[in-house]
Length: 325
Image (cartoon, rainbow, N blue to C red):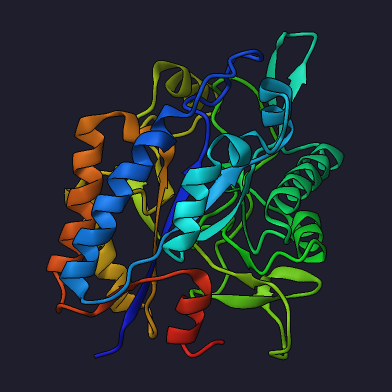
């Protein structure tokens, strides 16, 4: 029986997306997530007989700097919480969105179509992380599951070791019409179905030689039907798209277990050397009902398979278990 590495990727963020420019309130979802995931860690440890580690990807970018006065606000505000996570041997990394304040509309634009702005946001986050932890961020993800060649090149240059921005099998799609976005989600329909060191000239294919370099961890995904809001429905209708299209959706822990668990089983059967990623944003922890779903999904994933098969790991541990390190 091969051990399946499982990475729990927790985006540590404000409780909203297009937050008010002066809405510098505490991140209550993250505060609750610290307590909930401590209980989950203990439960998973009992179920698997293994140490349990999570990966926390923390927002630090231009929106955080504008709203909170410092891109590294969360690192300082929750200093003791992050110290506890490091003591538990969790991975703490960086999560960056490309929000830009538009004075004309007096609102945020998530500006992935502006490469210069994207790179400014990435550099701002990396500086804030390094200033607090006295080291580069080893783990990284862009918001909205977005990336491109130039951004991958930049984070590699900034000493990122593990990138969690690409979603397995996802085709390029326009961003949802709510609020304001620019750019298009990347084409990841042909990337490898395993962690790989990206080629220097094409992040969607593995490097010809092993060597050193950044690892891309394609995020586990499933095909899910979308039931859009009336705005999305009208937008699709104008463009002659199906009213209820299907999308490639990464494994979110808050999703309906009846839909998520069969997809987990199918992916385990499909991959020759399986691994799993599950994602969750900290704002989901504000709801007791959602917390119950998160717990049920993790407990069900373990219960449906042989005891001890799953290892909840950091990225470095996952690579070792997969024979890649």
